[in-house]
Length: 236
Ligand SMILES: Nc1ncnc2c1ncn2[C@@H]1O[C@H](COP(=O)(O)OP(=O)(O)O)[C@@H](O)[C@H]1O
Ligand SMILES: [Mg+2]
Image 1: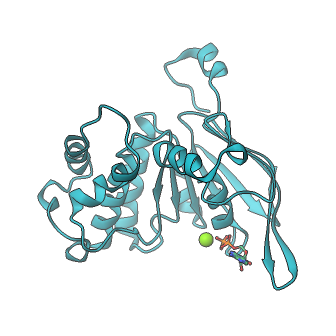
Image 2: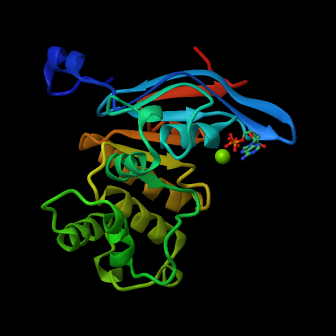
C-alpha cells in the first residue's frame, strides 16, 4: 500500500475491501472437473491499485468473476467488505455487489438503446444508496469523464474510447468500494487506451480502490502492485 495522508496507524486498522482466502474454482466439463484456480490468496486494501496479470487461458476472467462476486468459488472464502460471500443468498449478494463493486469490461457492455446519461444511471435502477440524486450524480460523472456534450448520444454514435468512458462513469454511479476492470483497453487503440488508463490513474490518486486485469505489462505499470496468475495460483 502506498503512503497516504492517513498516517501509519489508521492504514493498519483498515480492513480489506476484498479478500480471497485459499479459493479454488473448477468447471464441470462433461463428467470431468477441470481445476482452473487451485489455491488463490489475495487481499486488496482500500486505496490500492492492483493489476492482475497472466497469459491467455490462465484463469484471469475466472478470477475476475470471483473478485466481482459474479460466481462463487468451489472452495475457500471470498470476503467483500468483510462479508463472507458464500453465506449470502443470491438476492443479498446481488445487492452487495451492486453497491460495492463498479465493473468495467473489455467490450464496454453499454445498453445500445439508452443514452449516455441513462447508461450511467442504469445501476441505480436495481440498487441505489438512499438519499442520492442519481440524475445529478450522473451529470457530475459525465462531466468528469469529459462527455458533457455527448450526454444524449447512444453508444453507436460514439467511439470506443468514449463508450469506455461512459462505462467508467457508470461504474462510479453507486460510489463503489471497488472498481473492477477486465482488460478495459483491450478493444481500444493504444492512444485511446492510454487516455482510459489516465482516467484510472486519476481515480486511484483520488483514493479509489481498483483491481485491473490485463495481459499487457505496459498497462500493469499504472498499478502500484502487480500480481501474476500462473498455473492456478498467484505467484509469490
Ligand atoms: N464456463 C466454463 N466452463 C468450462 N471451462 C471454462 C469456463 N470458463 C472458462 N473456462 C476455461 O478456463 C480456463 C481459463 O479461462 P479464463 O478464466 O477465461 O482465462 P483468461 O481470462 O486468463 O484468458 C480456460 O481454459 C477456459 O477454457
Ligand atoms: Mg479473460
